[in-house]
Image 1 (cartoon, rainbow, N blue to C red):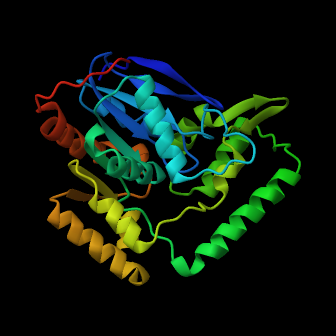
Image 2: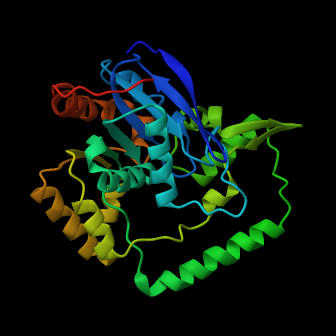
Length: 307
């Protein structure tokens, strides 16, 4: 597709949500939500391979990329991210749109689609399917540990480590071996801030804290069953597919498989790991393209939006 790309800035109470907009001003809108600790650069290699009739709004979720960090003392939770998506949709006057999410972004997309089904006409999940449940036996322990960790963080020095660009690349690759070298460099285009003597990682350290507002197995499955939009899940053989084979999650994965059959969700598997959409977008693009063309672009419903 012609790479018409512009920077997005949406004011929010604590600063702004940043991102990039790809494609025509009046294309069918697709909101794109990246995974944990990534940024909207996660979609840089995939979007040029997708239909030109869509407008892709790729977001840096709060605390990631170039978006503002949340206010001091505030936790990063899935409901808060869902509210951010709603803020962006409201600012762009989007009445109905598709959502494409990777990993954590897919969880946010699923939760949004369940809570606001009238706003979502299609849902694309990249190496994710279903919101991973929390063992309720651990709920209070997780909640307490999360609060303790936040207070400990607030008492520590806020100085951040400074790296050269190549040092930052190697640190990211060491922390996330699923990334290729080009993919790491792609993410760091928005993942670093200039500092005296080099660069610091731009993401808020608080995004590393464990989510304190987990869902029980029942709530996770109820949330999943509340999704009304057609769903495409593109799963990586060496990524989410391994989760499906974990014996400890048999009840969860079995229920998800049954749900996919009951709702006629489309599930495909591609060779690759968790970041296959970024590392090898040609393996993913044909499935996303076909889904958008048959489930979104072929529909006659007029979408009101202003980008």
